[in-house]
Image (cartoon, rainbow, N blue to C red; front, side, top):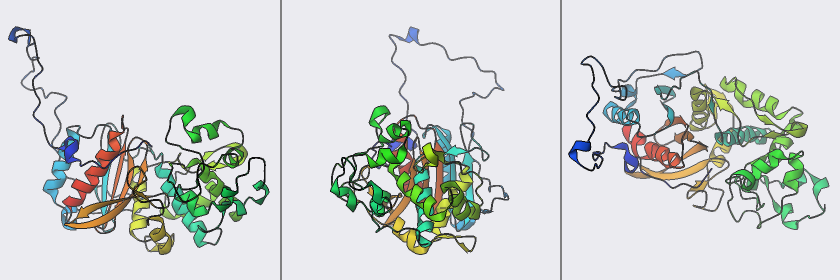
Length: 388
């Protein structure tokens, strides 16, 4: 994912702007407006937003009226009218959950509640959760050295002693020190090169070190395959089978197609596609400190640890990073607060604010990098402010 900065949604053009007339050589050159029959409505005229309580389905979600959950309908209407005026191009959906209820569910640009949205890098936060459950079960822990699980790889040709210090936590916080950056394109994208190789684990083992572990944050998720492979070995299951058993089935999520490579090794940094409501379940799980519908799925300790700072402060695309979750500071009710979120290519996001007891899901097909800052700004500057 390319670098981006936090941008106020208002500053990105959420308010209506007066449009200047195009410059023509003279008045005679201005074309006449197209004729419109009195009963016709121009196709580009947005439909005014009218709030509707989301539909109750059999997916485990309770639904509610945002006005009864201390939501400001006027502010939400303003947000929605701006979206309908295409102030957030490419947006596919906006869902808001509060107090364990789905309060707002809106789809755009031909999308619907039945659509499966590619999570892209939001998949990393799903893996963070599966990993947390594996740690709860004693399969591995963040302080263990990665090469303790692969002792036969030590001392091979090109071995760098600094690799012996790479911990599981370094991999989850993207501070391994390995010379592997997934933020590029084509041959500059380490993950793309790995995926073209015939031995994914061998590719990772052969990567050179760029610096000592724990010193520098570099966007790298493809190397997480070393951990998914350990979980598979320790659980005596394939990784998809394990993830389905411990996370997807308990959440009632039926889609779980992980990217599988040579020798059955799974990539866990991208590849899943979920319905928007199911994306909200992951956020709600963290908001509820590891609980879903009264059942413990992952430990409260892991939820806290995964959303704490573990990388050099401010060095993750200009903000902070936990264990495969993005961390950001903002203001809520005139007080500084922190929210965390899963973030994916083209504008996939699961935003969680414990202080506001609120989860927000956005999916999109953004055409440029501005989508990340616009969505972040919409959540931080507008949506949080719409709830008391």
